[in-house]
Length: 479
Image (cartoon, rainbow, N blue to C red; front, side, top):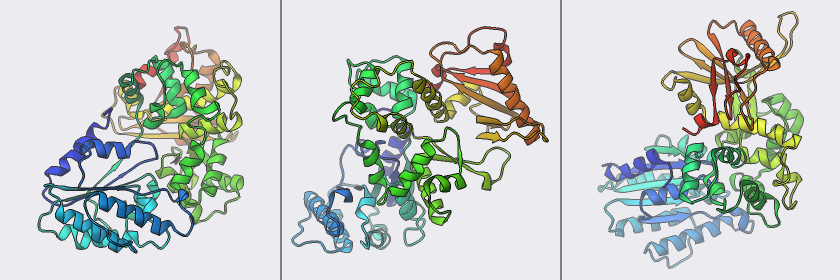
């Protein structure tokens, strides 16, 4: 298994615990949750079950279809089900029988895609509460390890992790599984004998993000452009329909979520809440707040309060690499055979590369801190912008990454994607001096401001390079 060292160690340690264990594993679709759990326990479960997507079930029969599927899993685990299950109470009664008759020292129960099982008026959560609170924890043997999984991050947070009912504070542990970093993607490609240099891997990450499943589709013997054409732009490409499938799998009614995503995809920088309402036609309400929070918890967008501002000035930004790539290229160029191979050096590719590289940097803050030698320094990651204000003496600026450090330093980070060493010039220096001046005037900070450049190959030696306090390269992001 590539990466996931701490997560695997934690799951394996559950076998040594003396009390019942209830664990939630969550994270976006295709991130490897199921693989992690199965590998950690060597595929040895007293019972395992995976809910089925309701999108594939005839409307009005979802609950019964889920129960029928659960009955099949009970039979496979050795529990004869001689009649049709009518409720989740009956289903969990069958699970109790499986546990009673299991010969395993620890009864590891793995229920995957739990959110899909919670159909309208299903009673699933209350039945799960009863099973865990009234039976599993009351067993003298203390031998049950219950692991539940869901791609619908918002659902598992609402109903399990942050539950307010009978499951409140019942979890004994949780794992929020994150995407691979660049180093893990490099290790994964090596394990599959797919050969790329690091610059190509960086470009690939700008398209696919750190989603292991997407990387598993890359074929050896193919160049990166060939692989991208195969995955997105040819007839029957494997990831052509992924966008719709991704959001439909996460949200029962994805329409408004997709409107929000589309609105954010058209903005290079953060967008205010009122702007989202204007672009989508969605009313400013608690429901909008909930949808924004759900998209944030699923890892598609980030919410941040610009440095020196208050919560009401928060901004929302699309950060999912795959979604950004889809909106920029895929939806406009479906079935254009060889599109990506022939796109080299175009203005649209150059503009996208700069934005996509920024997103990769935001996903590798620990590596950036390590390169700066401040891995152990408490640091707040932020961004900042201001409008021009002649009276205040500011010209208007945008800073996409601030590292506000407890050692009285703020790294003003500028991120530049380049195919060679970046030539720091007079125009760049003037722009950065303006940003730093605006920042100091409006925030009144007393921290030292360190101009920091993050770029692919470092900087070309010239008279202006000395303006930089630090330079971080793509090599640093792989550490």
